[in-house]
Length: 500
Image 1 (cartoon, rainbow, N blue to C red):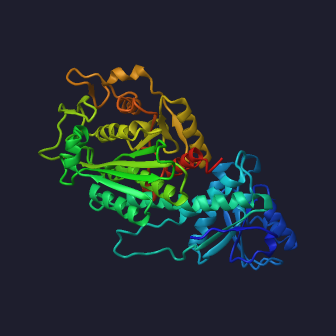
Image 2: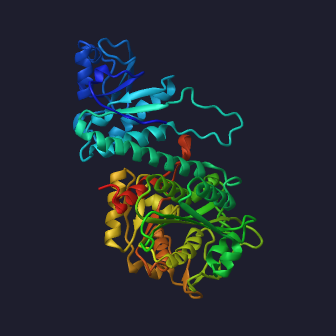
Image 3: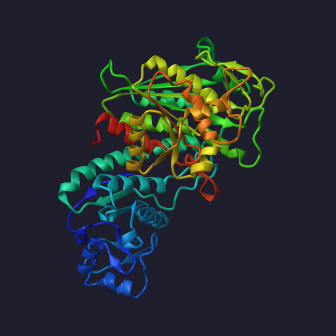
């Protein structure tokens, strides 16, 4: 899809569809007022008749509006003006794109970025418009025998900006938004694939393919023999129950000075998680194909970096495995030795994500990283605590916490900080090993999981994002969300200085 920035009199814009915002109480947005004036009060007449109440997300498509150059006008409700915020702005955008998808309109000009939610600058208003549009036209049919594309494909979604001084920021935002949208789409595609296709080997092949597409990316795949040489006993204990060999996928982008410390992103790549011997209930187990969404977000963020070319060094690390029951699978009570030399008593084989992550995090020490951020669909407890809106953030580094929280707010891909206090560490005590892989009680499960990981990250600044609640949607809209690619890309843009 193509996104362009337009400027000038909205009444003179030639487009198949001009999108205008309307607030409750028959209040027109500024661009809609300009169209109303050019049309001799045509929009006001319609509002007075009650055809559009301005409720958030309501739409009304108009034809043959007098005095304007556009073929159609789409009125989109934005709610009460005093309550208009980023959430209602995004809902209005989504409603507009949904209607366009349901018609044969393949191009439109959207004036909604000129509506000003509190605290949003032109850059993020335009970028949101791009990413929300892309999210709502995303279509998955990879594994459908009879592929049914949308009735019409929105090819051009142009964005109108009123002030000339905002044009440069708007163009940058449209470019960045398009890049982020493509990164999110990659993460969605990987997350939505079934476990019999998206195996650890498939992820490795996709990384190699990314390296062929982008020569600046160096890709290395460590096989199980390599992992055995490295004494990655924790990671290998998970893959023992699967016929699919584990992989450690390394993707390295060098955009900064050779001696500059890299930013490292680590993503949990459980391509299917049945729970191992501690097998999960059958209900909704199909959704455990999404247990590799942390890995998918690393792929998406790395692709964004390759297109944006930030002046920093970035490394993506993906430990990939399946977790299945088998005669050779790990059993509750087994003790394994991690790459760090610390021993782990496996009390629950369904707490496997931390086992593959801990060895990957130890491996990261060799990069002498500036910062390491891992993201994982790690605990249902985090989803219970925070729901589907923010991910859980854990770190002892105050500066890193502030950066990630700010990046999440700016990107509209929010995180919420949870404690990582030493008080919780004793929950991991074991009579037989250096630690257990789960807490001794069911309370604070997301926190004890983060405490477990913290024992492997003492040699560098580190943060953990528990994305179990945000990585995919259930129900009618079941599918991967591509989060937190937006947060990660915002962090990279800010950290590299590409975005002030």
